[in-house]
Every structure is written in C-alpha cells, then in structure tokens.
Length: 177
Image (cartoon, rainbow, N blue to C red; front, side, top):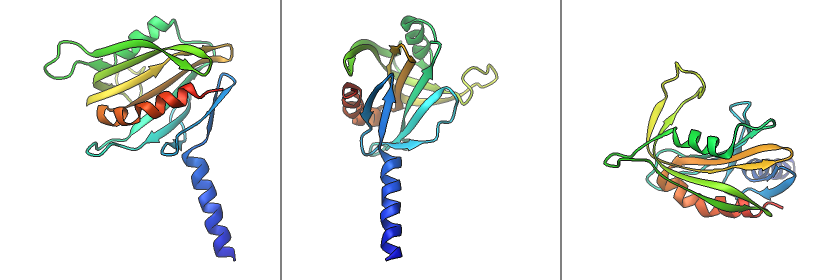
C-alpha cells in the first residue's frame, strides 16, 4: 500500500511542477501541460518554464516572466532593448521584427516577434559578459503594465521550437482572467 501511495504522491508533485496557474497583475492562467516550471535564475524573473525543443532543435525554449514593480521604462524603450539583443541572420541586412497588439485577458498589450541571431548573456548588464551567439533564435515578448507592476512574458529559443509553441503561448496569454 505504501508503494502505491508513493507513486500517487510522485505523480501529484510531477504534475504541479510541470503545469500550474500563473498569476500576473491579479489575473490567472493555467500553463500548458508541456511547460516545466523551474526555479527562477535571477531576481528579475518572477517565474520561468522550460519548453521542449522541436524535433531537430538541440535547445529547449524558455518562457521567462520578468517583473519590475517600479517599471522599466516606456514600452518603446523596452521594445528597442529587446531588438538590440539580436543580430541579422546570415544573408539578411536586418533583424526580422514586428510589433502588434495581443489580448491579455481583458487587456491589450504590445506583442513583439523577433527572429535573428540572439546574443545570450548570463549577466546582461555586465559589460565584461560578451555573451554567446545563438543562431536563428526567435523571441515573443509581451509588455503588460499593471497597477501591481510591469510584467514581461518572454518566450525565447530556437526559431522552430518557438514556432511550435507559439499558439500555446498566445492562448495562454488570452486565457488570463
């Protein structure tokens, strides 16, 4: 009997660490089943998830929710900062980027889609950190400004992996209530 109780407990804890409710600005949405919640690697991260790689990609994607209680500049400043993290793909003269609006629960928020070569830095504000260039990466970035603070859900990873999970990401954003 103890054996079955142990299996049931392990299954419960695995399920809660893989997909759970995320709360942003007083609204909640359930993370898709394939997203695995991880311990945030920085104090600027409210939470983060590992999202499985698409077939043929060696890296998983990450969903990071950045949070700044006092804000982090204008929406335009933030969009420019995100774009600056990318270089054009080989053979292109500029980074592919577009900005639209997306429903976030009942709100509308700026939604940036960037594709290019991403400069991954472990310490983004350290000038000594030269970073590692990740080829053909894509980032989906949302700016949600609320009275509780500013939230920035960011899906980043290999372009094919991000494309595979784009609909889940957008549905997750729209389902906040």
